[in-house]
Amino acid sequence: MSAVHEHYMAMALQLAQTAAEEGETPTGCVIIDGYSTARTESPVLGRAYNQVELLRDPTAHAEMLAITQATEALGDWRLTNTMLYVTKEPCTMCAGAIILARVPLVVMGVADPERGGHSVFNIFAHPNLNHSCEYIFGVLEAPCLAILQEFFRNRRAAETDLNEAGRMMEDQDDS
Image (cartoon, rainbow, N blue to C red; front, side, top):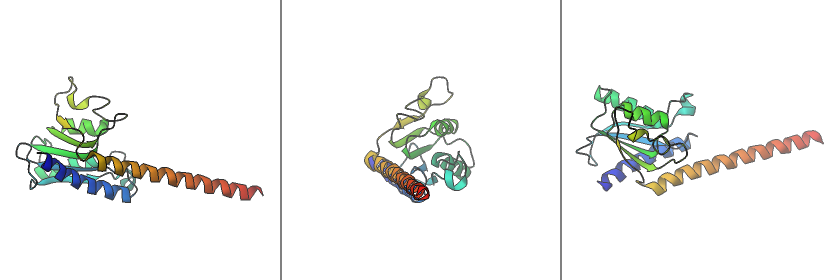
């Protein structure tokens, strides 16, 4: 099964790269049909990357967009025979949507121990919710982490450059 997981996580990584190139937090998500029969030829029901900035919508996370595509493809809001692949652990909003959609398995590249919907709030296995899901962390973890680290390193460098340029302009105005 690990070859199947790596295959679809590689697809999600390509989507995350597209997000990074468009200035979005680099998260990609792929949802496939066939929880019990998954293989590398399983139908992809939804695929998306973060588009919060592009759509000016705080809910336009990769997982939310992919869930919408998958429910449209199936004609049902219940994704009971699917697997969701995502490069970074879902936030609480996305983890909640995954539970509501009845996704049975979430495969994640990298955990988010500070803000993750499962790591922080145990949403995937919370005893008070009417559904739970299995989850796997660490599939293609190194490249998933690398794309996030590079994105935020570049963003911090750009902010530093902008701040320095602003200070230089202020210094010129003072002289």
